[in-house]
Image 1 (cartoon, protein in one colour):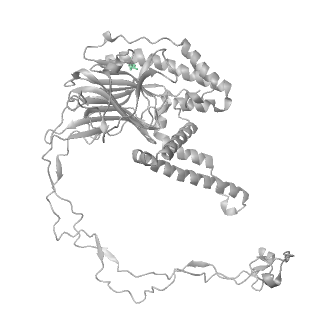
Image 2 (cartoon, helix red, strand yellow):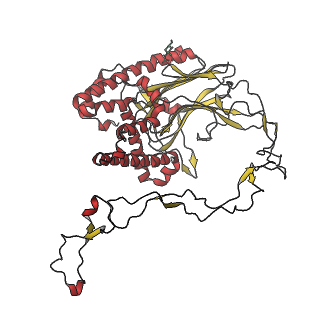
Image 3 (cartoon, rainbow, N blue to C red):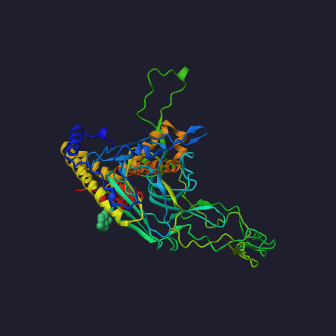
Length: 554
Ligand SMILES: *[C@@H]1O[C@H](CO)[C@@H](O)[C@H](O)[C@H]1NC(C)=O
């Protein structure tokens, strides 16, 4: 939903609501410890502290996306409250803030927390934060780009039906010096509402970790528990021996042709046809072989301007013989059935291979690069906090960014900033919904559901169609880049149009069936609309669970 699409009285109502809204007051930072970082974009200092990337690729700036610090453009909370806003649709954005002193998490708790407000929704794009490595990270000489090393990547990422809150830790193998990204194997779902969402990551020195959304724990576990991170923090103890070779006499054929049956049996008739006329079928008694199936149309008349000399002899067009409606006419032919004597082409039968040794696999050896990562919570020093993002949806607002060692501080901030703001935003959503309803009965509820990311199947279908439309628009304007930057979606919407085409065909054929009193079709009583919805629900079933708790439906 865009503000420009809102009816003028509605826009006025939102403004009126904003007029009454409490005024933003900065959070009192003296409540935080000195080592904590906190940014709420409440002063012009931000432009000195935050560095917009000027990284180049092939001599051209690759991060053309713009950043701004501005007030909320939808469902405003506190008057005068500003956030950092990603401004450009379908462009790469990168910005970071260097920390005064590197953040050291050795034997300590790490708490990273920030707000995301998807003011235009999120059809395809990231809204995650990167805690950048102090070593090799951006500096006065090195611009921030997608290759800048990070320690933690955390936050929402959504494209089409893929939706997750990433949690990735980058760990170095001390034996090889190679870094590997360790991904949370089953990440929670990101909220896709247009109100502010608070994301909190807590990593304890006990290796316990927690992800909270809006102050509620949505994921908790231990970094070292099996299967929680993929790949696991410890590399495999054993690896296949690369130098091992399959012996020349290794027989890995499970089946072999039967040596006892090398010839086609005498009675095997390869020529027997697959279908034959049904020998049991009999011509119905009423069938009239003497009557013609087609007869000249008795009502046809030779056109007046027909010239036999020029046009040749006039012959009346034929029509199906009306006499044959009740019984068959013309030569009777028995219907065909599958030939029981059909054998097809003979091939030598297969038997179990007595020399079969199974699939060959190289033997395992101890992994020379193995190490035990007992404390993945001990990150390397973090030198900066950055956003390096691409998004199909502009105006993603970030705010109240915290990095520290204290869960209490994060909760204090959450309660003092996000919670107050969120309550007002919910009021704005309701005011908008009431007002739209008064002005326009028909579309109001859908709009609210869309705005709040409600779990109504229709809203999801609608937003999915919007996403597809947006993708198509982009594709029409720049097909090559769209395909290369978002290949998964191309497949998704390509597949979707096939599904839609199938549904349309299904609906049309169902309607036709209503008018065709064929007894064999009496059973088909499926509801095409319900089917279409079921289709969408399958796609959206994950998102559903996630959106319910913040939706403001009546
Ligand atoms: C507010 O504080 C309470 C405890 O003081 C905590 O449980 C809750 O998660 C906090 N809310 C947020 C949004 O941080």
